[in-house]
Image: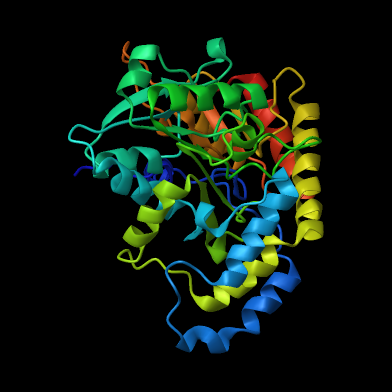
Length: 381
């Protein structure tokens, strides 16, 4: 198997010869720079004695309850435990679930958006699956699409709404249309919802919510994944879930007992606090909302999604832009071409864009964005 280097490895190679002229501000990675709420930190510290126990692969009941309570609070859906598996974050499940599910097919086919979170590509390679890329471009409003023939072929389709990196978000009716396709063409539809809690005013719809409201209350062929990494500024807790079709999850839960990715019990206890820390999550959400407002003011002509903490900014030559911006202003952003792959015309779908992470406190982010905007307007790259 041959995997491409991760985007953050590529950016280090790109800038390694460069000595920036100013102090560096990294706007590349979507790593929250806000403090993890103290209640969550305390819960972790107070339960270190549980390190002497082997954690259960399926997760403790208190964690199941906390995640189900979050889903109930957020989507007004009451799940049975058979509809849910706590996971060690979401990267691991996005990598190993396709391998588990696609192993039953002789010639597996997997579809996912382009540009993308690179773990989708890694999963397709590890699964030895043929890939159908759903190209997200300005002309299609960065919305994923498959032809009837492609849907007939696909075994697993991954959506990512709200989307990383474009911020494009599928509305409730659009999600329900995808669910209808999944049922009609009998493919499994998985929505990566890790950015569902970052929004300005109204929360985006979720795939389980859409499924339930249209009458598919057993979530046949439908799965959702999510985590508390962004919502509670706690990516180090590695707490996520996969939820939906109980029939699929029953077999997947057995498979997971062999993976060795059980969540340590102290982390589970802290995560159970985090999943239900709605007031703390709201404080963090408002910080991201303020950052989006700042970005909208600085880039008034850029259509910025209210469901993201990224800017997907068109700059022309994304590699040169990144190098010159880093050299002259000390601001590091991620080239879009590192997140995209080529279409049938041999054009990299991410080329010409950069991804900018709005993850700092506003007093750091605002001057950095103003400097970036001035640099872009001068066009000296």
